[in-house]
Length: 583
Image 1 (tube, one colour):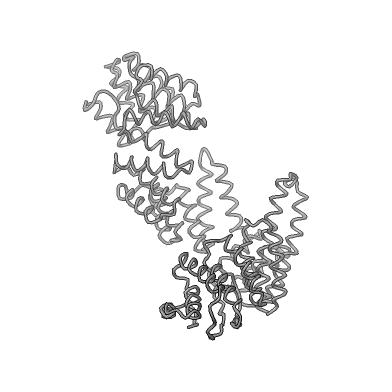
Image 2 (cartoon, rainbow, N blue to C red):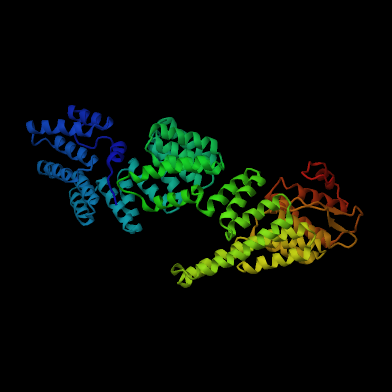
């Protein structure tokens, strides 16, 4: 734990000593501004020989030593200052900070209490005590102390920053934003405020505001690597890899030893499917982390694992990572080439078979895809049996976790198999696969269930089992309420239940779930008397259009129903452009 408030305090409070605008004061400020603390210490030590009881000199020496982490000297000079001026409450603040940096919280608390006994309205002491309490998990006590500091000094930016930082770490974005906006009001030129605000806006998915905030920070200091890294991260979240790459490269030019910049640059290349560039940059990040005196072991382990997965050709993941990259670049044949090489080396690797199946399906090689998916299911069972023999899977919790992961994989694979059978007009086989998918994910909150239910509805529509199809679409809609197409298909199943309206799909090849949204359905143009099914269908279509105003399938269906009901509003909907050639 480090409680050093070094540059942070100086930047927030300026010079906190009693003597302002003196010669020594100007020297101290100049030394801090130029980061020449060692030279400053030499100067003030020389002056101390002439003026051994000068409080300002003693406190200057204490502050400069604290900035360099010289904790013993920090305490020595502030204690000397207290001999000269026993009423120096701020001196106890710095002494407490030094003790905390030595992991001696008891001594730090004692120093704070001594300072408060001298001056119960010293906000810095409440700030430090609040930090300690929050660190120890005493949220009420810690926030209470920070609030006391704010009551004493409503314009002290550090108190709002500290409390805002705590709220941000706890995920309380509303309270964090409130404190940082107040800090911004106090000091509009404080770039740290804009960095924090950018993080909050990003967490709230308000990326334009995030970019606006971080751009203000960069306007204040165009060389701030922290601000550039933050903006790069926002760009990365927004899937704007080119701009993210520019920011990370700029950080590296400013600070060639910044291992975070190399890591984020690698991640940006990874998003662009540039695997060789990823390997190059993540290797640099690892080399720089290894030079650190104190290594973040969790981060270092993550870097090594990620590098090995993508860059080590002796691992099976190398081939499917490269294959996925080619597949995402819409080069399925090149992807299959990588998968073939991987299978030649690792003939029992279920992941490679699964990904090769996806590539085959994208090329509408349905039988080849079926073969790959079946091999994938076979080999994952073999892997599961081997893993269960491992000491890592002795506990019930670990076995349950493994079981969930395997079932999720199987569920997804059965959905893909159903696509293949549907393309081959084997609807019964496709339905069997969907039922197996749902069986492997019995918990309705599991990832694949909504997809499986939607696919089940499509298959039941193909079998003219419209009422059952509607129930499946309703389940999918309940699980994924933001997916407007589910409501479209509920409406379609209702329309299909109106007698005298034959409905059937055009011959269509399915590659992914997205393709299901674009199946062409044909209807009779015969006018039918009003039916309660139409009214229910309209309710679902209106709901779909509210979710997605560009849902042209819903607009088309609404026009069709309104035409059936003899309503003139159908004309307006039929005039609107559609992504399907169905007008």
